Amino acid sequence: MGESETKLPPGMVIGPDGKPCKACSSGAAFKNWGKTALAGAAAVTKPLRTQCPPDKDQLGRATWTFLHTAAAYYPTQPTPAQRTQMLALIHALPALYPCNHCAEDFGASVAQSPPDVSGRAGLSRWFCERHNEVNEKLGKVAFDCAKTDERWKEGPKDGSCD
Ligand SMILES: Cc1cc2nc3c(=O)[nH]c(=O)nc-3n(C[C@H](O)[C@H](O)[C@H](O)COP(=O)(O)OP(=O)(O)OC[C@H]3O[C@@H](n4cnc5c(N)ncnc54)[C@H](O)[C@@H]3O)c2cc1C
Image 1: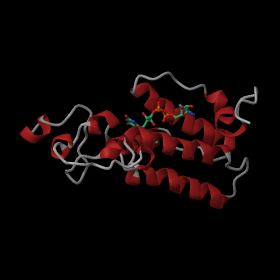
Image 2: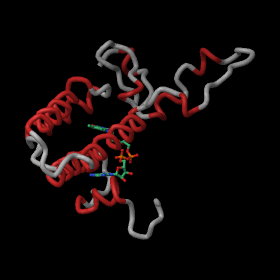
Image 3: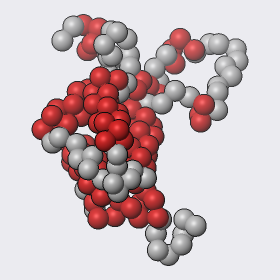
Image 4: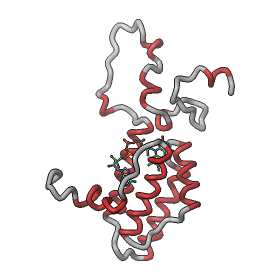
């Protein structure tokens, strides 16, 4: 490990371009980043937090929302073209997902467990299992994959999301 790397705040990850990668790092790592540079500035106008670039967790939540929702609305009997398109989407992630260490692990998971694009139920379960692998790695409780439709399409039976 080089001298410059040892000075990085905990949780800060360097991207493939050699610069701190916000989309690969925990938000806390970036909280104080650059504070020294800003100290002494007469007035700093901060953007609304909702308009800030995503950290790793914000990007993850948004991406899982898209992937699980796409699976929940995937046809029960997809056409060959729809299967091909879904496979292309999944296989693009290891190459294009901005958190590079997440992308790498996801690529290994896809290679280990080939995507089930045969229909809505199989695809929802497949994404759920991949997401649970990440949950496990991060020490989180596994999600009950029987509840993907309730979480991502129908909402709870008590009507609290209606
Ligand atoms: C492809 C991919 C790979 C990632 N790899 C990493 C990684 O290697 N390291 C890392 O630190 N972060 C990684 N992340 C981010 C990580 O998965 C979380 O998104 C992030 O830690 C925020 O977690 P969270 O607890 O807010 O909720 P998230 O885990 O983002 O979950 C959002 C919501 O999805 C629901 N949910 C949870 N689990 C499941 C499931 N199994 N099936 C269906 N719904 C579920 C829950 O309602 C939850 O509130 C990755 C994200 C993606 C999209």
